[in-house]
Amino acid sequence: MIVGLIGCGAIANIITNNISSENININISYFYDKDIERAQNLATLNHGIAVINFEEMIDKVDLILECASPDSVKQYAPTALKKGKDMIIMSIGALMDKEFYHSIYNIAKKNNSKIHLPSGAIVGLDGIKAVSDFNLQEVNLITRKSPKSLGKDIYKKETLFEGKASQAVKKFPLNINVAATISLACNMDINVKIIVDPEVNQNVHEITVKGEFGEFKTITKNHPCNANPKTSMLAALSAIKLLKSLNETINIGI
Ligand SMILES: NC(=O)c1ccc[n+]([C@@H]2O[C@H](COP(=O)([O-])OP(=O)(O)OC[C@H]3O[C@@H](n4cnc5c(N)ncnc54)[C@H](O)[C@@H]3O)[C@@H](O)[C@H]2O)c1
Image (cartoon, rainbow, N blue to C red; front, top):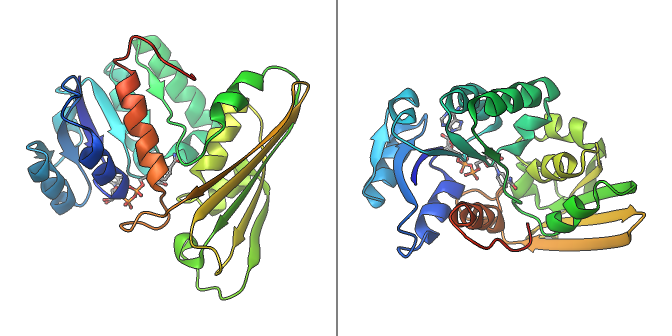
């Protein structure tokens, strides 16, 4: 499988550093970034090809792995899917725009392409998906991050946001993909609280789910990436696992 990357930042670097050589079926070969130097650096490290335009790589790849920004999803996903290419999308917040979601869903369906959304920086999505059709009553997400991770100059603990996921992704588009992922997985505009806390040095996501099945709670404490403290290592690792799963005969916990 030939893979083309959009975005050559923190997540892309973790992915390419950690895709082991035993995965000979996954060749991350094309690198695109609006910052061409980033694309060139990552391409050189991975013996790949840096492209100046997205269009240069689209006919050469089987799958596009987006790890850039919500804007890039809106810019490139329709073209990729129209050409029958599969996509892994990291900037999941882009799909909270319902019109856009339905538009790329229809394009993918018509052109027999697939859209894959990794579980990202949280655990528990398997359970959320499993119970989502059985009278789900309540899903809550509390995200705690340091001022640095949220890109804020704040010196005391503060609730920055309390409301629905659809509003949270508008206010914190680069920080709250997790809220979007959960909402899409359970088809519910979930309750979100975002707390900035100078005492916290991890990106912490606490999820509680209640429904006819009973209830569960998960807490994920992520180390922020050095290259981009908004991003957690687990997010990149989940994309690697998803990429590998596309070639697996037995898939567990899907
Ligand atoms: N799903 C999740 O759980 C999860 C977790 C963390 C981050 N993310 C998202 O993944 C994306 C990448 O995160 P990151 O930490 O690697 O970011 P980053 O800032 O380290 O790197 C992003 C790269 O993409 C490039 N880029 C941005 N917009 C572009 C465009 N329109 N066209 C081409 N290149 C573009 C930038 O120049 C940069 O090099 C972000 O949108 C982030 O919000 C998702």
